[in-house]
Every structure is written in C-alpha cells, then in structure tokens.
Image (spheres, rainbow, N blue to C red):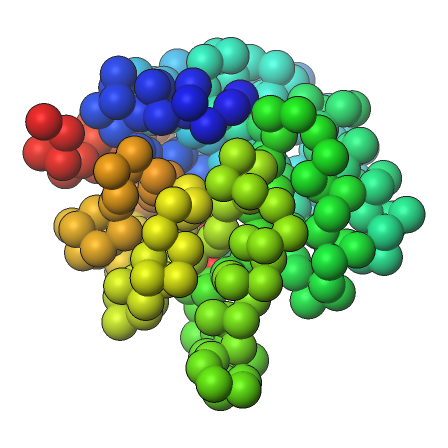
Length: 267
Ligand SMILES: O=c1ccn([C@@H]2O[C@H](COP(=O)(O)O)[C@@H](O)[C@H]2O)c(=O)[nH]1
C-alpha cells in the first residue's frame, strides 16, 4: 500500500488505530481449542470485530514462530483474511548482513505479502536497504522503543545529541517518506516533540498505548502532522479485552473506544 492510499484510508475511517495480533496461545478462550486452528479462529473473530475501527493490523511474528510450522500456517491464513484495504505489518524486528536481509525482505514482502516489516537498524545501512527495494512496501525501523531498555542505548548521549536522534536522521536519509516509517514508543512522551522536529514528515508506528500505559491524547497532539502520519498500535488491551465466549464483542468495544478517542482529531 502506498503512502497516499494509507492517508486516504485513515481520513476515510477517521482512525489511526493499528490492532496488534499478538495472539498468545495461552490466553485465547478455551472453547476455540475445539477447532483445527484456534489461533486463526481467534484472529478471524478479532478481525471481523475490529475491522471497522482500524486502518492497520500488526502481526507480531514471535507469537506465531513460537508455535513452529503450525504458527506460520496460522499467520499466513490470518494475513490472507485481513481485508485488502487495511495496512499490514509484520512485526518481526529483522536486521542482518545484506544477503540475509534480502531473504528476510523476500519472506515478508513476497512469500507473505505484508505491506511492511519492522526492522532493527543496529547493523547499519546494508542491513536496512534490502527492505527499501520493493515498490509500495515499507521498512518500519526501530527508532525509540517503548520499553525500559530504551535507556540502555537509545537515550544515551552520542556526539551532539542522543543515539536515537542519530538513528532517526541517518536512517531517514537512506530511504524516503514513501518507504520508511519509524517505531516510536507512546511511553516516550518527553521525546515526541523532538522526534517530530527531526522527522516531521515520516509515518510513525506508535506502540505502548493500553497495557504499557501510554496516553492516546498526548500522542495525537504531539505526533500527528498535516497528513496524520501516525499509526497507534494497541494489542493486549483490545484482543484480550475479554476471554470468554464473548471475547470478540469485548474486543470490538475496546477498539471502538480507542476509535472514539481518535475522532476529534479529524475535522
Ligand atoms: O518499542 C516497541 C516496539 C514494539 N512493540 C510491540 O508493540 C506491541 C505492543 O503490545 P501491547 O500489548 O499493546 O503493549 C507488541 O507487539 C510489542 O512487541 C512495543 O511494545 N514497543
């Protein structure tokens, strides 16, 4: 999906919500274990229940990879089931030397036709560039993450600024606003303004609202630009809003609640 189409979808739905399909098999309702593929049946119900409120789904591949071959099959079926006008993210956090990165890019853009994949930039330009070679596909590069560990390296001084600032400006120069987004944690509220000074036009994927305590309004007020250009991810607080027979209705309610918080930001 290209940038223009994504912006149009956001404006049409008046939503920048991304629902995270972090489908932890130990947390899905027990009645689904009577089916052949409980993970897929869970995702299918969640997608049906939330698709009117969301413009993106983020599949965290860890939860599928942990199940081996069965997990990859559930992931492929889930990706296939997502409506084609909704942006898809493989949250795989890949990054390796060039020829290996090429294989990762093929995995998540060709074999599994995602719109985007998350990429760890620590290995530098040749590890990110293979993800920038596919038309209308995106590398979503880890910029400033939502976790406590972001203080260990990302928020440490480096040259004139902080390490993460250097990552944002350097990675931004490798691609364009049409093929590069950045992950910026909602929990990093003191840095959001600075992020927008450094990369005013790039799309940001913002996890950390919901279970991690980030605040939707702070994010929207600080990080939105004239083209909106943010996707706010919520995983556990939506997909595990309920865990009984009515889990999908509870997820729909939670997604609608986040959607309602976003509406006032659209004129
Ligand atoms: O900095 C980061 C980068 C990625 N994530 C991922 O986002 C979701 C958040 O899930 P919640 O349940 O809404 O907390 C999850 O897939 C993480 O791996 C992040 O949280 N922070």
